[in-house]
Image 1 (cartoon, rainbow, N blue to C red):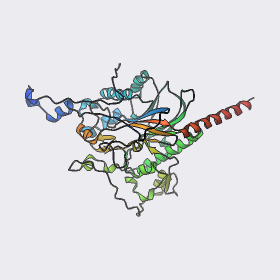
Image 2: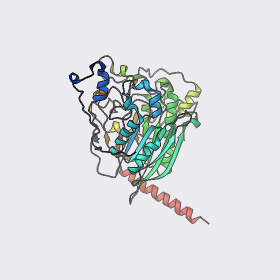
Image 3: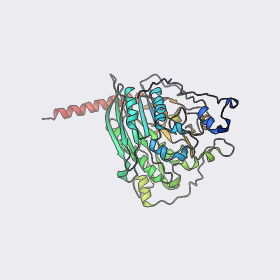
Image 4: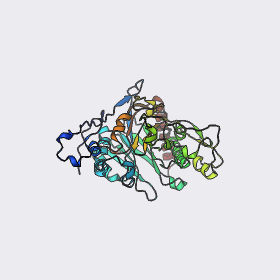
Length: 426
């Protein structure tokens, strides 16, 4: 099956089909206003690029997209989450077309997808658009996993590390890390990570353990290649107001100050709570007493921190969120500058998706999310022009001078190592 993609990379799809005049209906006794509105009327969906302020000088740049595309099996098994979504918009063939239209239309250099259970459906289309790809399926009975695609004419894959958390006692989730080198006269190297963190809000210790291990492996791999810059993409299943977000954006977290069931902040994101009776967007608050120590078992502490005797979990990387760095509009961003929502269905409205970056690169621009009032009018995602219950995030990054110096130093070191090995060979 072939697809024609006609998509402007600066403005996403726009729909403004007004419902037909009911007076012209010839089957009034079958008229269902709600069904009619859902199919025939969709709010205008416009996404715009937001540039960094001050602007980033014109340097070598690359773009990364992160997108939880909603696996087909999950969509069918949890139909209660999409009770407001017409069945047509839930069908995989339709969603595949819409998702691929987004991916090819935005034209990112590197694509990180989560909840992928139809990898070859996507790869067949993306390969024709010039992408190469890799896939890591979850362990256990789950059929979805994480996929990464990159423009084959721009990047060369140097190393891949797949992470199976089950072997660490951290459930069946997976992640993967890929080292790339740009196909340039003066090549640059970078490390891209992709993860789908466990959903279960009650298991904050497992969530934290998964992220902790990802950060540790990322640091090791980055150092192995000469402290190359890092981008970590994914669905972290944690909100911007959560302790887990605090951990990612800082150097450490004392887990004893929190209830492990509240580490991710997801409990405060049911639409009825978020909007309240008045319908106004409220920022979730955490009624936690920082002087109160919560009860954790030794096993739970070990899962979270990696050491049963340590109550502090350490982040070895200095990370920033690209969306928090590049400020957006009031209609799309919260008090900490993160998007107000990257996911919306009948039981959740909030942000769980991020693009984290390290030193050596800086965001030049981001694709802003959809305003809250527009998202609410959809009644829930997926919709006619959005193929998942998540929004894709895209950041364009620029290499900094520090990255250039590190890159040259690492190239010299690797060259010296190669020469030494060559001289010592028999």
